[in-house]
Image (tube, rainbow, N blue to C red; front, side):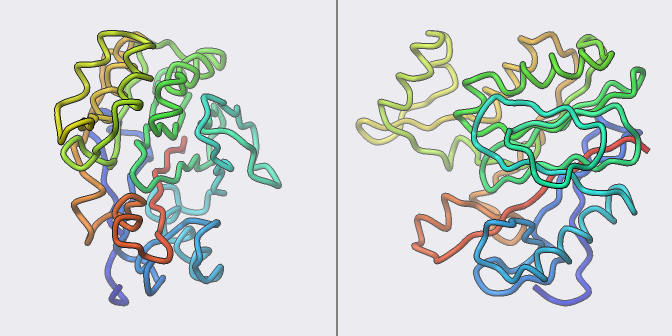
Length: 255
């Protein structure tokens, strides 16, 4: 990554007026397989580079704020944050009503979801991989926001860069998990080679948000797998047999 390249902060119209961004890989200091704005603490990267990248990401969204992230476990667990914790809590979503905290979700193909009820002053961030999405991580995030005074009819949400249907091939067993949960989930799959299908994670997450009662959901339609210059992708790195992969971050907070 070339020094001096600015951070790629992608913002959603649904969250206009809220401090937020989906950060790509541009503008960081990491090199090699994780070149760019890699924020993954668990990646095989120089910890000093990761720390600098995380500082740059926060500065692009909520300058001076502490960054709160989870130890993500592909669950539907939500953590309500009142102050920056000393250690990363285990879970896959964060909510707060406290100004000056940057809530961050790391992804590398999974769907990052940022949410806000500006009237109530409540925001949330969710990591929706297929396991968490199916388990209801977005539903749990909305419920946790309501516990802080939000109203789901006012909550706006945006789904950031994630792996697109055209890039996400899965097998029959994968489809069966979704069909067993709800037969209508089959509409999020299309045919691929024999015994395989292509799954639309973004559309499924958008469906879950709408079904939960949200009236404004932006799906940005950005494919992490196919856009190597802009995003990290776990699946792309795996297909290439690369030794490591980076993680990008989505951040939201109250000013």
